[in-house]
Image (cartoon, rainbow, N blue to C red):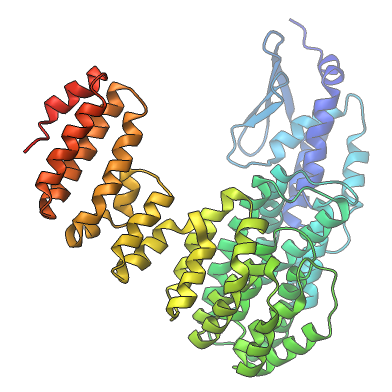
Length: 522
């Protein structure tokens, strides 16, 4: 049959334009490699190396061959908007050549290529050769300026793609010397994030979705590895300006003023924990922060704690924590981790004790319910690192409330307060399996008698469900109760108890059968 490429191109014009727009966005005219892809794709069209072999109208699939050094087969699925090539590259000259071959039936390939090349501002390889913070920053500005179109919102599901695309282009210009490579990676990481963050704030792009969280969390993990590598290496004198630039970049990221504060703070703390160790630099940063009044989500005074810890200024820490902001407990928690990493247990203790009166408000009023359990678990781990007196511990577990049953149970067991342990689990009933996780076996071993009322409570809860399955579970609990009574020397008490239960529920035939099977009487 005759193959009308013009008709196919016109019918699928919107798809072709979308694919070419993607290439315009992904390929950077300042990159020699990207320039080569476009040049060879345009050449394949002009040289008539793009052969349209056959079209399946039922499936809306077009099969083509591009005559290259090795022929490449390109298939376009117009129905599902997909393009596949037999070569291994993701964005290849063959796919671009085929799309331009179709585009020429309703547009000018020469004009498309000229418009793409007109976006070139500088040559990236020339900037890379200069090796200065300014030239590296211009590289990032050039690449991100091409990817992030002005005033255009970014949907959160493409954030990962944008970041990886930028890093893919910039990694081509990484220095060959191994001692410079981690520095380049971290510089580019922070510079790209700053450009992305500024654009998202400017365009009011969504920053709260799981996609955005995942993308930034992934970048933090990568950046943390690079910081750890940098922290173990000796520094060249020539790298000092780059460390100054990193200090500015990570401060800029923290003070951006909107969205995912926990990640911005993690970057900032990790840098000051691993790569910035000079007292002079810490003093300089503290002065800068004290002279800054940014419009951000938290008081800048909290961040000053980091540098009082670095500078071992105990008086300033004591004064600072006199006025804890109850809405920012999570920031104080992060700074406590920082203090412990700096082996400053005294500062960590001061901050944790200052936080205590504000925990009930933060846990119950600031945190949403699904965050409370995890936060309490993390916070309890921190408090186990410091010494608290009995009054402070009771204040802590009172603040935890129902979200801190397990740590409070551990505390009561350490103090051998078994009656209170039982009372706690009467107040906040859960399940036998949860009781075991909270230390049931230890109580059973040391003071089994106090458990009898608790076993009764859980067995009655099962009986109230009035099903055979629940009756079976109730008899299992009574077996455990029998074992506890035997250890406590209360066998007769248990026998009387079971007789009472049988009499109380004599109309529940299924329960009576389960009791007979269990053989609970001594």
